[in-house]
Image 1 (cartoon, each protein chain N blue to C red):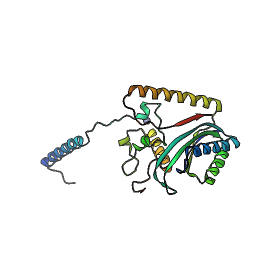
Image 2: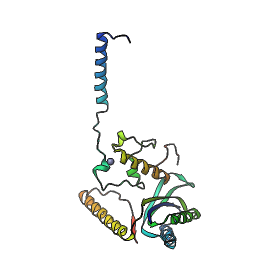
Image 3: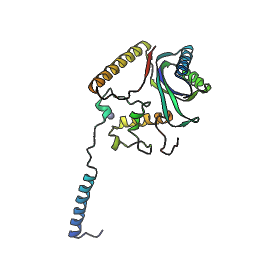
Image 4: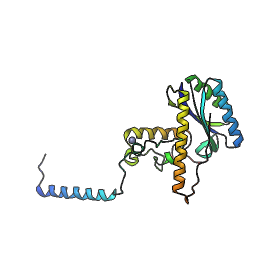
Length: 100
Length: 139
Ligand SMILES: [Zn+2]
């Protein structure tokens, strides 16, 4: 591997820092990192409730990943299960292309 | 004895009386095969996310009961034979439940939800939102 020149390395560093800053401002909306199902033990996910399950799917009807739902792995599994049940009962669509 | 919840969707062309009759019918079916109904819920007429049997609406009904796994076969057979049922889904809620304790738990849970709802309503007096119409009966 050819050794990089000093100024190149500096430029890389600058670019990394810039990218980091830009990235941070791009996603700077305050996101909850806590799992709301862990926070409230009485909160139960009901697959019959369209409003409740609907917040965990994207516009295209896909299941949102944990980085959006903020759920822990256990409750993310619960969310996934509830969504799949809700789809069977036509509470939420399988896909956005299902025409009425 | 396991505890099961069956949610099914009824034909939207029927009336509320038809829904009640259907609940009664499946309640009897469950009772005949050695099951015990905990609660039945008429969740009302809702629009479906996609069409089922050319219908875009349906009555959602939920049955909460306990029984053996053979009971589920019988109940689901009943759903398949009933042409007014658009879709059904049975899930197991608990394994090896005791009927009396579970009944008590459900009543307590309902009381808690009622209390929480009352508190919520008191908090947002002016915000009279369209609450979901639910009919809950306890066996
Ligand atoms: Zn959690």
